[in-house]
Length: 238
Image (cartoon, rainbow, N blue to C red; front, side, top):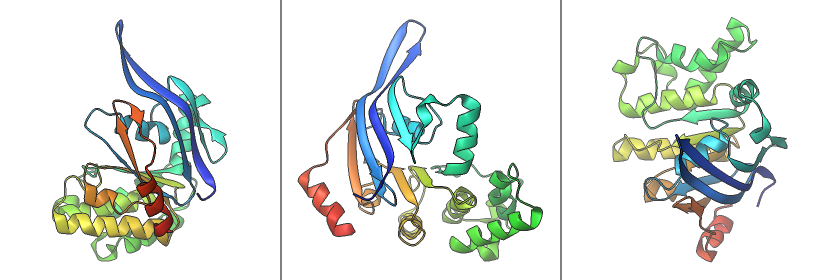
């Protein structure tokens, strides 16, 4: 495996609702290398999105540690996590989460508004991100003027505009037709291979999972070990 970027050490997550305890993840141990592309699969309710949220610093574990690029993010407070997320994580969601009254350019610029970049620097970053996703000619369009695949590409441009270390993608093709889904997967592969982004993706789609270097399965909060076939495919893909 490449140099380890994400170390998940004996992580468990339990949600509490009044006196009820709901275990979601149990003793997760996982290493993800820098520049890796990992797909997480499993039935609904297996804990996939919870694990993704823990890696992204949206949630914190009940037990265990999560160390990313040498920092223990599980020990950070909320304000520290917010700063860390803005510097290190790019988010890609199933439903795009674009603001309808903003143009593609303005949607992509949003993460940069809280940075110290000048207006000119922000514009350069946005144009570069939209060019990478193939939408340089759509920057003045509003979401309603774009196809679903184009909206997701705008969302990906927004995710990469601040040059994050890790891209986390939660069902990024789940709301797209087959052709648009393939285009988005091609783009994720390019971001991983050409731009060396580490990608962690939750998906129900075996075709999407097949694009990853590693395929991991969660079931009832337990992470299955990689099978020899998975390990062999990992070696073949590099």
